[in-house]
Image 1 (cartoon, rainbow, N blue to C red):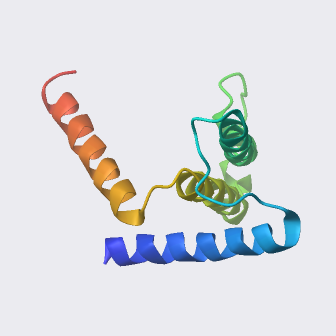
Image 2 (spheres, rainbow, N blue to C red; image 1 turned 30 degrees about the horizontal axis):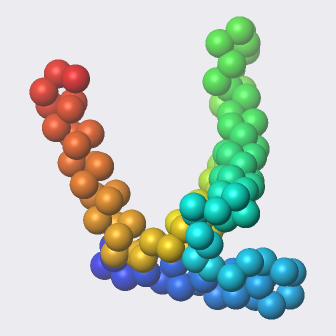
Length: 124
């Protein structure tokens, strides 16, 4: 089921990227990451993803260590999720733009997760 959801997310993002290519001059993809233009475009998308994560972080006003008051009740969970979803759209766009398939991404994600678990269990 996880792979099906991931595949669905990839397909949806690819459709959006096709629309951007048709209507907004988005480049053909995958881009050649060995070229200056390919790297610039990938970098631009990565920056957009980071910008969305900064917007998500900005909703975490209760995380400030210098704040004496607790404003947890003011947390806007929906806004926070929206910004994380926006960042995820850009990250998936970056993965697709770079030419990775859902299976490649899933395999690399799973492999890295296993490495992280092994590190924690071994006292890393």
